[in-house]
Length: 315
Ligand SMILES: Nc1ncnc2c1ncn2[C@@H]1O[C@H](COP(=O)(O)OP(=O)(O)OP(=O)(O)O)[C@@H](O)[C@H]1O
Image (cartoon, rainbow, N blue to C red; front, side):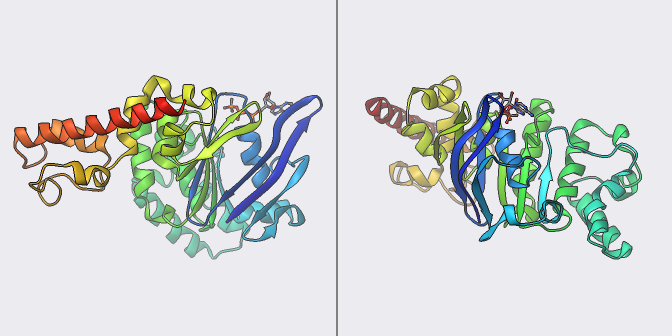
């Protein structure tokens, strides 16, 4: 569990972060979302003391991080930086093994763990372990950076725009893989992004930031349907329908669905978001009749319009 209370960072006259407080429960992901310069990276780096806070307190698992040795603290927190931060003169295997080496693991242990992670992150050991960062694509470098952050099995992971430099397709694929990676299931994660879709896909909670402050913190649904002010709602306006379809699952419209069961084997999984489900329906990947598919579409769209009306009424 991470608890940040009233943290601020001042650079001369610039207040990069102003009196921010938040909690991240064990195993949850908090996304810091905001436009360039709003203080996301500064907030993240205060949590592993790459930047020292001007005031406030940060606790990780009940321990005040300001009383710890910063270097030792950083060995217990996984960190993926904005530009992947790989050492160019180290091979992939050496880059991933940096922290275990500092922790004085046996070399055989380091190799075993490195190779397992490489395979999991779809970087076959034979092909990639001895390569240098310059010989990798952007997406491959990010996978190595994630492996490096995970190898010592830290309970907390900090990620700064981990997919930022990638094209939209690679970015979406990596996000999907990232969500399914068993290593990440129980981690407490703080992730920085300016990408709304990324925030909604990966965050249990999302903190929307502006000018060094958290304007609103909540689940995707809370932010979409109960925005604190026009800044928050305008943040989502240009892709609202897409976000709403992602914010609901087929569970949510179960009662409104036609009586004949459409969810289950051969049909649509109840855990799918409406967006994913409708994509499956559109691609003819289910065993449902066209008539049934159209009924589901109609129910989904009606639900969204109802929600949208509720949302408009709250403004
Ligand atoms: N070392 C520094 N000295 C002075 N001002 C700084 C310093 N680092 C950051 N700032 C300022 O603090 C503010 C917040 O910067 P920060 O890097 O946290 O923003 P960000 O939201 O992460 O932006 P981006 O998405 O572009 O990385 C900015 O106005 C920035 O100019």
